[in-house]
Every structure is written in C-alpha cells, then in structure tokens.
Length: 494
Ligand code: NAP
Ligand code: MG
Image 1 (cartoon, protein in one colour):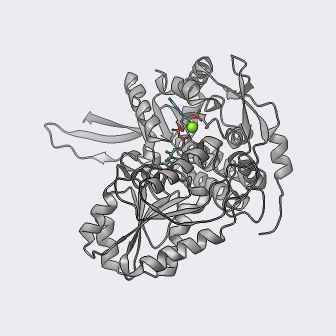
Image 2 (cartoon, rainbow, N blue to C red):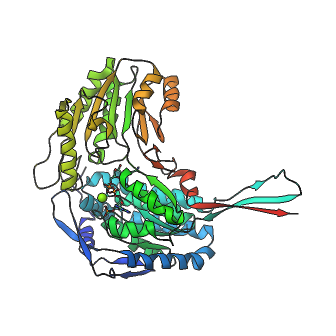
Image 3 (cartoon, rainbow, N blue to C red):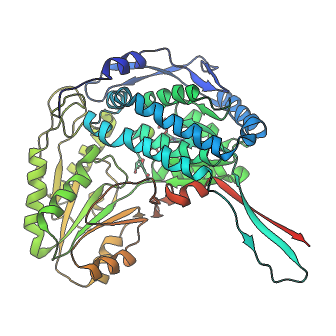
C-alpha cells in the first residue's frame, strides 16, 4: 500500500470540531451541557469531544421522530426514499478517504481495512437497501372461511427505531442499521458507542446534506447507561436494534418489555472454523488466520475456535503461527500496519487476562506474534493449543486476536458438529473442505446463523445474525429490511 494519507487532514479537522447532537434537523448541545472525550487507540491522543446525550435529549429526539413519521416522511414515495439513500451513498463515496481516516483515528483499525472494507461496505449496504425501498410489499391471500373476501397484507414501517451500535466497526455498523430502517420508512435515532462517536457524527452531517425531512434521523452521542438506557426504555420508541455484548442484550430485552418494543439483537460469537481432512491446508490456514486476526479479533464473527483434523493439524497451526509471526502490528495510520491496537486499555487488559487464564489453566502458548511498542493498546496475535472445553478461552468471547486451536480424530460429521456446537453462541461457522457432500451436511448440522465454506466475509444481501445467545432476528438481506416493518392483514367482505 502506498503511504497515501489523503483525507487525514480533513478527518483531524472534523474530529476537533465542536460536536453537538443532531435532533429534529438541528445541531444542538446536550441539554445538560455535558461532553465526553474520544481518543485514538493507536497512540492514546485526544481526538475531540462529543456531546453526552441523556434522557431529556432522548425525549426531544423521540418527539421529532414521531412528528416526522406522522408528517412528511410517511408521504414520501418509496422511489424518493431510494433516491435519498443512493444520494447518501454517493456522498459517502465522495468523502470516502476522509471517513476512512476518521474511522482509523477513532477506532484504531488499519487505514487499509477502513478503506477496503468499512467504507465500501457502508456504500454497498446503502445501495442494496435503496433497491428494497420500492420492492417491499405484501401479498393477496385466499381465505377459506364463510363468505367471500378480498384479503391482502401490507408492510408498514415499524415506527420510531432506536439503533445502538458498538465500537468495532462503527461506521459500517451504523450504516448497516440506518439504511434498511430508512428504506422501510422508519424514523431513526442512532446512538454510537462512547469510544467511537466520530464517524457517526460525520454520517449525520451527510444525512443532513442529503436532505431527509427533519426528525427522520437523529444522532445521540453519549453513554450506554444514560442515552442508551433512556432510548430502550422510552415508551415512544417502537423498536430497538442493537449490536453489542450479550450482557447488554439481556438488559435491552428487559427494558423493551415495558411497551413490547420489537427487538433485533446482534450479540457475541465464538465462531468455529472446521478444517476437514481433505481441505487445502495452506488456504485453510490463511483463512483461519484472517478470520481471527482481522480487526485485532474484535469482530463478533471472528473465527476464535479452530478445529482441525489431526492429519492436518500441525500444518494448519504452523500456517496460522507463521501468519501471526509476520503480521505487522502497529498504529492504524502507519501504512505498514496489518493489525491495529484493540480499542482501549480496558480491552487490552481483558484480552491479556484471558491469555493468562488460558495458560494458567493448562493451555499451551503455541505462538505469539509481536506486539508493537509505543503507547497504543496493542495485543500480540496469539495461538493457544492443548485447550479443554471448560477453559474460559474456549467458552467465552474474548474479542481479541486470540485463537484456540484444537484437533479432532473423528471423521463422523455428527461428532464434529456436536463439538463445534458446544457453545452458548451460534453466530457463524466456517468449514474448509473440498468434499461437497460433507460441506452441505455439516452446514445443516451446525447451529449458526451463517455458515461459510472455504472463505469468510459479509454481504449486505446475505442475512446475518445468531442462533442461541448470539441474538434475535437477522440483519441484511430481505429479512433485514422486513425486520423494520409490521405486517398488517386487511380482509374485506365482497
Ligand atoms: P456493549 O458494551 O454491549 O456496547 C454496545 C453499545 O451498547 C454501545 O453503544 C454501548 O454504549 C451501549 N450500551 C451499553 N450499556 C447499555 C444499556 N444499559 N442500555 C443501552 N445501551 C447500552 O458492547 P461493547 O463491549 O461496546 O462491544 C463488544 C461486544 O459487541 C462484543 O461482545 C461483540 O461480540 C458484540 N458485537 C456483536 C456484533 C454482531 O453483529 N453480533 C457485532 C459487533 C460486536 P457505550 O458506548 O456507552 O458503552
Ligand atoms: Mg462499551
């Protein structure tokens, strides 16, 4: 990659601006006047301050969203919603370098990743959902009861939606939530994570520029315990979509009970990567390494449990170790960097604690790459072997660059699936094999929302979400936009 840092100057200037909340089409300080600081995880430097929304700000945003829904937004034709979303995607494309640099500053990820994944993914998500705005519809239904009926269903926007996102892919995740909700005709209130408010703020400026009616989109930067909690408890909010920890997911389910909010939850994962004996060992090793070390392992769907048939175990683990050894860990703005820091010192301590606990409980530290020197929150890419199923490193989501590699001797797919399924989570699973039948049979047996064979990735067209404690509902694809609608059945005696 070239050392091209275009967009960085604009990103730094934006970060330092006087940030406010975006409510009812206006930028205003939090009613309390409170702000909070955001830092660069790559060097700890202060980037800027954002306004800290609380319950009173939430009241204003909810009222504005309701007014938009009761007023101009519901009158806007689907094709116009499609155009607005497409225009937003064009604006993001125009400012792609600046947004990528801003994401790297605030989150720490390699600039290359922000440019090649986060920003393009956001653009594609908007364009994909833009297409759905004109295609959402109901069906006619044939009734069998007494009488003659004309019956049909319609899909209506679910209403005021609170969207709460984490810090690991802040921009892509915010857009992945906002795009289908707006395409479906909902009004949105977005709360980014306190660690990473900046790209959501930039997104709000572009949404303002596109010209959505006021109140259709509000941005509340702030803390989970204040802004987030007030949103999920608010009686004027019809739906909450949340990506984050399973623990906070549970809090949200309870809070949503007050007015029976609709809830979509994308929570944690402990994705198994299964390498069958016929797989291409070199490709599987590289795929496994990418799956756990991309974004420093801070991906809910990171392949954190590697199961390799014993005949390939040494080769695959050696391949992953080799990848880890060569991985250049450093600040996201360094063009040489392939893996950035984790988000915060707390997260660094948490991940390091898991590695220590694993070793204390008897795991072998099979390989560990270099952690960059300097003030950033760096954790070395780490591979543990000789783990047992009850160890915390195998059971719990670490959300860091830590892989547990295990071997199996069995060729019985039921047994392999049982081992992979032995988790509270069920977000994703990856299978490496050239055996078509084994791939399809395993895909059926794995308890995961997404099964990938011979590769990884994310696509706005492919439903994404979890079985078990990995969540409720799906994002992306038809399911993702339908989750922002209510079905109404209409039957008329004729
Ligand atoms: P988190 O603590 O659950 O935070 C996520 C978001 O929820 C943040 O905006 C947070 O605000 C907010 N929040 C916290 N407490 C809240 C409350 N009581 N009410 C309402 N909102 C509240 O998660 P995290 O530690 O930041 O992120 C890592 C976790 O996210 C991991 O477990 C990971 O697996 C999961 N994740 C899942 C997916 C997926 O698609 N399944 C994707 C990415 C991440 P603050 O910023 O103030 O904390
Ligand atoms: Mg948090």
